[in-house]
Amino acid sequence: VQLVESGGGLVQPGGSLRLSCVASGFTFSNYVMNWYRQAPGKERELVAGISSGGGVRNYADSVKGRFTISRDNDKNTLYLQMNSLKSEDTAEYFCNARRIIYGIDYWGKGTLVTVSS
Image (cartoon, rainbow, N blue to C red; front, side, top):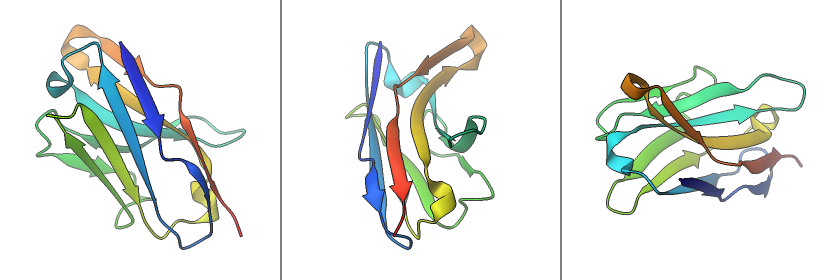
């Protein structure tokens, strides 16, 4: 099983980034997918989640209206479009695959997003 994130980097406040997470080794379309983030000195927090079919999405209040989660089950890929980035969005962003009924949680290694002028 692998979850490989990409797309992080340094961006100015107000800018945009698109994160990607490519999954392999499991049936991607069966899993709820989530993006988490962890800022230095803080706990990991849920940013956004999307149901297995993509029809249900949820967001942390702090990112609503600025971030959009999506998935392409044909490409086994999860996305996070981040707009109007703020300094407080600076964190390591992690891709997560979850199948609660089986108690399964897979994690990627993360991609760093730094929002700074």
